Image (cartoon, rainbow, N blue to C red; front, side, top):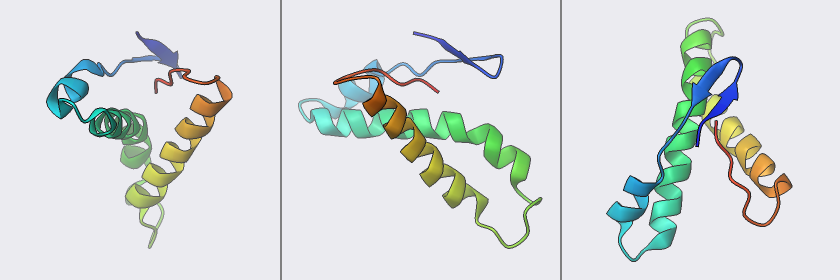
Length: 84
């Protein structure tokens, strides 16, 4: 599934994360959510690194993006998918 945000197409295939995790489904979920978060936050980090002095842009952007994605996921219903 591909989603368009800010005129860009974004897609992260979850299958490799679940295959690599084997029977540990939660490890697959964690790997997939981390990949989605990294994909969503990459443009923000690229834009603001070196612009905002003395701010840990990577940590702030990563944690904020993850929380926003979780909020969107929960707002979508019991198991609504969220794609960056």
